[in-house]
Length: 182
Image (cartoon, rainbow, N blue to C red; front, top):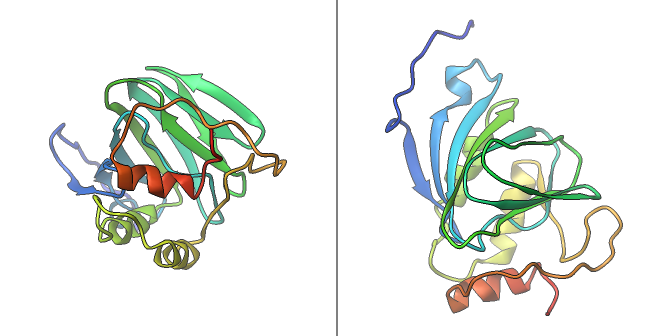
């Protein structure tokens, strides 16, 4: 099935809020691209972002629209501001964190498409309560995503946690499972 031409207005797309307070808008889904890719817009609060993880099925391309983020892709760590593009190939451990004091915005292209199914399921977990880690891990396995411990995902060497603004206690409890003590 060929991909149909589309114009996606600024305010369009289905929006969900996920654990940690990220707001995800599905701009283009796999159903609209014959499975070729998906496009998500994510607004990440200060200090927010996913724990280190690996995708078995998808490559991710991040384009920073607003704010400042620290990306860890394999052994490489970089700070990225507006206009920066970061590629995270499948099979390479990666994570990102909004290091700014205001919400940051990313445009994320995922190839092949379908990652939105994980995000939709992930959004069904309470966004303002400590996560059920067993449920989160099972969800990840179902979608080909493995969450990693609080260490450099490539060398398995503990790394220092980045400085983050104060967040709600439940958020700190969640990240404590992934980040080493300061």
